[in-house]
Length: 98
Image (cartoon, rainbow, N blue to C red):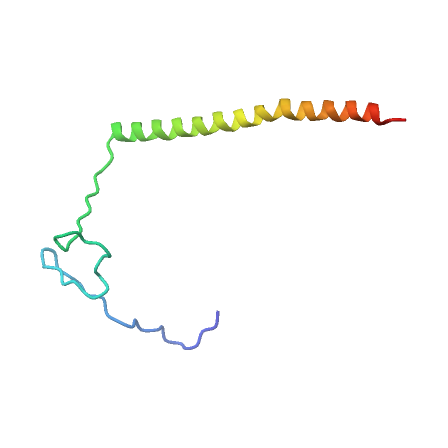
């Protein structure tokens, strides 16, 4: 990476520091695409407790087990199909010899 100058590049705009409790001024690019009827969108984030974490891990484990069973089932389904193809190829080779 080339260094074009000895001084660091200055930011193009200064950040605006909004004190706590001050009303927010909506700018032209700060508007979300859909804000509903009130014009503001509020997102609530809750801390996950031990019961919620346990249920989440249980759901992830059950989903992983279901995928594992489906994968093993698909693999086990191919074993008899490949065996039949090999047997048919062997019998066809026996009859193809002059």
